[in-house]
Length: 387
Ligand SMILES: Nc1ncnc2c1ncn2[C@@H]1O[C@H](COP(=O)(O)OP(=O)(O)O)[C@@H](O)[C@H]1O
Ligand SMILES: [Mg+2]
Image (cartoon, rainbow, N blue to C red; front, side):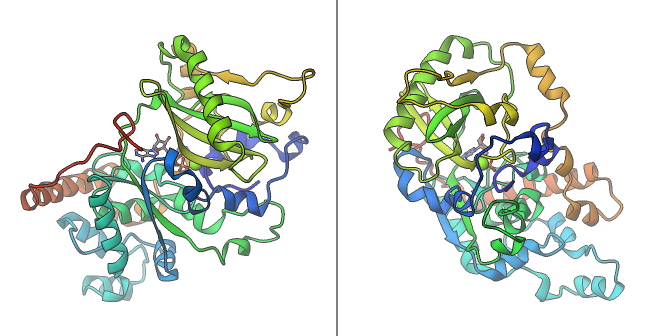
C-alpha cells in the first residue's frame, strides 16, 4: 500500500481498512508510483494542466528537508522567524550556544534554489503553489501567514516544505508496500524535484477525483466534501465533460492501468484541467467511496453486458456534509508538525503561530514597500484564458 500522494489518509476510515479486506484491489507497482510523480507526467500533459516549473533537487537540500528543526533562509526573513531559527529542538546546551552565536552550518544555503523560486514566482504571475515529487504540504498550510499554500518568496516555500509531514512522506515512505519494493530503500535513489505551479484561485466545488481501473473510469467523487446546492443541477454536464476529457486527453496517454486522476472543471470555458495523478491504492483518499467499493467496481467499455455504470457521487445535503466533518479534521494526525512543537519553546502553538503570522505580515508589507511594481499576468489562469 504505497502512500505518495495522500499520506494524511493514515487517519481516514478508508486507510484503516486491512489489506485483507480488499482482495480485489489490483497491485500497485513501483512503476505506478513513479508514473504519478509530477516530473513523470507533467511533460505529456502540459497543455491541460496549470503552468509549472520543476527543479531537480540536490541531495543536500533533501538532507536539509529531512533534518530536525525549521531553519529558514536568511533573506527576507522577518524578525520573529529569526528567533525561531535560533531555537534548537535539541536539549543539548552546547547546540543552543551554537545557535545563539549564529552557527552558519545550520542555516540553509541554497542560492540556486532560492533564485529558482524567485524566478518562478515572477514568471508564473506573482504567486506559486509548491509541491515536492508527489505531494503538496497541505498539512502545513495553517502555519503560513495566508493560511494557504500561496507562496511569493523562498521563505514561504521553505517554511511550508519544512513544516509538512506530507513532504517528509514523499522523501522517506513513497514506495512503502508497493510490489517490487522490499524495503524503504527503494526510494533512496529517487531524484526529488521541487515543483512550483502557477497559483490558481480555484473553486473547490469544481474539483473532482476520478478513479480509473483497467484504463476505464469506474467512479467519480466530489473532492471538497462540502454541500454545494448548485452541483446537483450541473452534475450530468460535469460528468460528460470529464468523460470526454478523459477519452480525448488521458486514456491513451497515462501509462498506468489503474490510477486516480484529480481534475478541475471550468464549465464556462468547457475546459477540464488535470490537477494531479495518484496511485490506485487506499493511500489515496477514496473521498465519497470506500476502497472496498472501489475494489469491486469494474467497467469494460467494449462489453455490452455485465457492466456497472460508473458512479458519480456528490454531497447532497448539509447533513451529509456534516457526517464527513464528524469523521474528524482532515489532517488530525499531522495538524501540528513535530518540529514546530519542539521549536515552540514553551509557547503554545497558537501563540507561536500568531507571532509567526505577525512577522510574516510585517515582512510582506516591507516587501510591498520595496517592490510596488509587481504586475500580474492573468492570461493563463484557470477561469481566464489559459493555453
Ligand atoms: N496551482 C494551484 N493553485 C492553487 N491551488 C492549487 C493549485 N494546485 C492545486 N491546488 C489546490 O491544492 C489541492 C491539492 O493539490 P494536489 O496537487 O492534488 O496536491 P496533493 O497531491 O498534495 O493533494 C487541490 O485540491 C487544489 O485545491
Ligand atoms: Mg495528489
